[in-house]
Image (cartoon, rainbow, N blue to C red; front, side):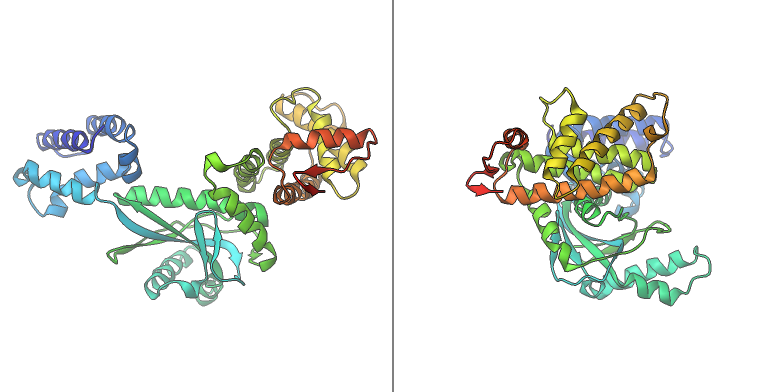
Amino acid sequence: MSTDSFLDAALTFFNWLKTTDYSYSEEAKSKIRDIYRAHILTSDKLNKLISERDVIDTIYHTPLYLRKPIEKITDNDFKKYIEMSLLTPRKMSFYFPIYNLIDIESENIKFGQCEMLKFNDLTNEVQSEFECIWTDQSKYMEKVNLDSVIDFRKTLAFAKVDVEVGGLFKAYDSSRTIAEKSLDILRLVYNNPFKLVDSVYVAADGNIGSETYYMETNESPSLCRDEYKKYILDLTEIFLKAEKDTTRIEKKLRNVLKIYGIKTSTTDYKVQFILMLTCLECLLLTKNEKDYINWKLAEKAAFLSKDKRYEINEFLKLSYNKRSIFIHGEEVSKEDENITLKDVHELEKIFFEIYLKILELRQLGLTNIEDLSNPIEKIKFSTSAPLTFGVHPI
């Protein structure tokens, strides 16, 4: 679909709207949705520029923005206005506080498609906008000192996201999507949900605005320390790779980021347990390993662990059995078939060790998880051949 066909459809709707009471009726809603599906969703160019909310907001506010009565707005007026407000790409920068990530040590940290900044790195206008947001939010907090709230939030890390879009609502959606996906890197590294709440934007023309919600953050703050910087940079490199240049092992590492991001967003420890096992399965197993999955998963994880290999092997076999009972809704017949909070903590320790080991092996030449299978079999049956990937002995 072309831009012209969208403009014609929008104009037809606007002229129809002139014959009504101008309300956002069910009929109007249906017509706009048809335009969105037929002309925007089917066009990569338009879908990157505008959202359905942009179409609604822009058309309904045409008389307000043009400062003309609706009956005096010509077809040419309308098309020019739509082209200017929706179809002309404009650059915008969004700033999101990363609640519970505090005290950045390094400068210019990149994670995913975001840049991490300190409060003092923000312009005075952006700082003032956030202070206004936090002042307003403090009205809904019980027994808090406003100065202490603002002083603490000035220690937060901020994510900066740059987008180029046509409509403001598309800008909100695109920037938040980019920030959410990029934050999965930090969620895994720090094991913290890092919920996105507020944002302040600055457009290329200097226009500034914000989007805010009230949220009480109950998670413990994480210190932004340099010791984690290497992992953030390694994962960002994988995150930003083009699909055609990504190895099988990198795809696994990237997919686990998404699953783990979901894990940090739930407080149900049984669901966390299931997602942690899914992360390990995603990392270590192949599509051809369909039989004796619990044995194969436990064996590979134990093999990659530094110590307590027997205990890890037994724990993961038992854990996979607990997973099956939970997933299939079976009756728990023995006490040790129950999923416990202790299981989640133990699984987290194993997962992080394995994930970091796979990251390390990637640096040493591992490109495909299948390359682990033969060395494991050789070592299991006491063959003395070293474990190698490419030219790098492990």
